Image (cartoon, rainbow, N blue to C red; front, side, top):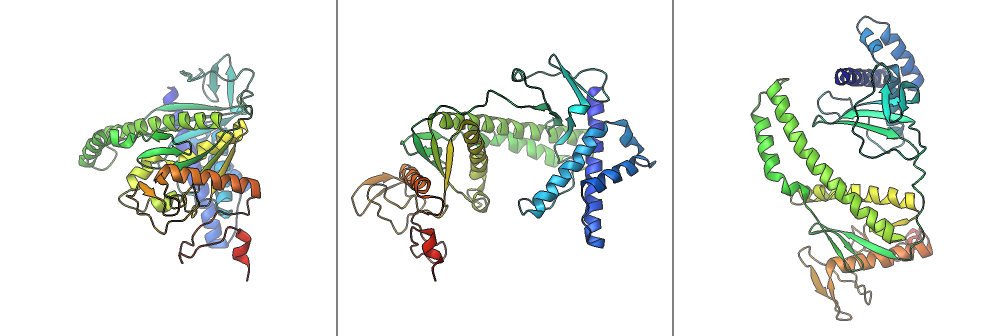
Length: 383
């Protein structure tokens, strides 16, 4: 019963979001008019009074209003240049969700009751809520694998800055090893996708043989593929959280490289491995945990030649093919592990940027001309 009610709510949320997106797009295309949340909220009231959309009154109004707020946030991101133009929500491809604010749910003694529901949800809690914390927002969702989730937003008083640590570490991302630290430690890349690649391929072939449409057998095959993807994603995220938590706890300053992951994904030979490594997600997790616990993350310019620069004497090697994992400096004769050397150079460059200010860039070569650039960012702006 509760699953049916939530599914109906998900459908209404998707319908309202798509209708509002159509209205806003047509207003701009036909009349060059921007309409915001207040206008779409008034439209929602009018939609509920029509015979065609009268079913919107059967679910709580709060998730519908929240869908309009999410659309407003999507347009704000688009106009600020941070995101693409909002897309329609798909019944099959989108993660289904509904958001309830404090006026639309009751939370008491660990029991959560949503608006329009007589009984509390049967929840298996993954962790207790922080002591004394009251949830301000509840989001109920269902992923493509059919799993249900309840997320509660609340302030956690336990998240406080850690005591200062004197250590600093340079972090170089890789494929053979997920992370290489300036200390010489190499963190193994679990390659979660590769471990389930055969199972995933079989499930995808089975799905491809099913006739397209809304058939039961095709839905079962689709869920099977989704469950394998979910298994891969969950293991990957769990590993990233463990690694980043350890790095943040042990180091006060963490230096990483500004990788252009989207551009690197265009390499057909490495795209699957890069996607499985999830460098972008790793950086995101590292940055917000550092902000939580009072640590500093320094991002070094992506054109900094960390692999080709000798960390002992500073000599710059002209070129270094990807297959070369060990190299000897022609200036001082030191033999370097390519990745460890890169991590040490990132650490040195990051500490220099931290000490001298964000306007200072490490020595690098121009990406187009191949000419050596100066260390000072201001020098490149001189006539």
